[in-house]
Length: 224
Ligand code: DX5
Ligand code: ZN
Image (cartoon, rainbow, N blue to C red; front, side, top):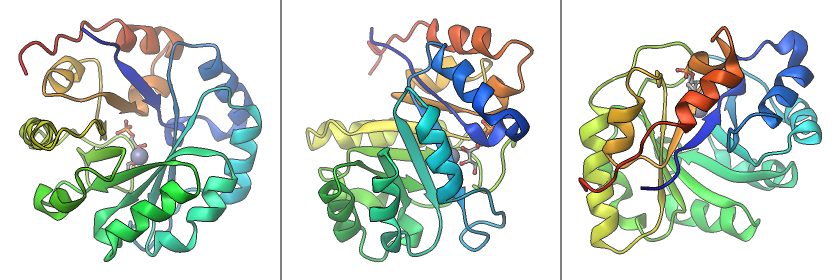
């Protein structure tokens, strides 16, 4: 049995009181701040960029898990790493040279994550299983918070977990999109290490209590 790691997504917070929202998560048992960067090109939405992340970094007391939903992410890796990203995740669909991009992230001192959209096969990352520090399985089509969980992500995670075991990789598995208390146990059982949760944390009546509930889920990996 090991710990459930939780990364609340700030995309779902009240930006009118961003500092208070960050402080609330600082005071909770959450493990990371999930920070969604969207460019209106890779995904049909624009979120926020460097000046906002600089502010987040100033107040955050937990590591920043930065999810880049942008084209040509290699152009910005150094900039986001300098802003204090602990995990920097790029989309494989946006990276024709994913092996090089992973190396570039690691050279900057961040952990390298590779994200896959729901329609993207695990075969696209098979050759970098041993290189990336984390794989992010999207359980919604990226671009917006509050969408419905796509259940194909569960068998995909099971398959990813067994691919990682086969090559003796210790890369973590993260899931993002539509995660809530109703499906978290099932997602964890498939082999997930980190849950991203936006609406189900910031949209809850008591977000700190929601974090605690996620953290208290019994994570039994003996079925793997
Ligand atoms: C979606 C983003 C997610 C989003 C999750 O494109 O990558 O991180 O904030 O939000 P919920 O948990 O509300 O689906
Ligand atoms: Zn995300």
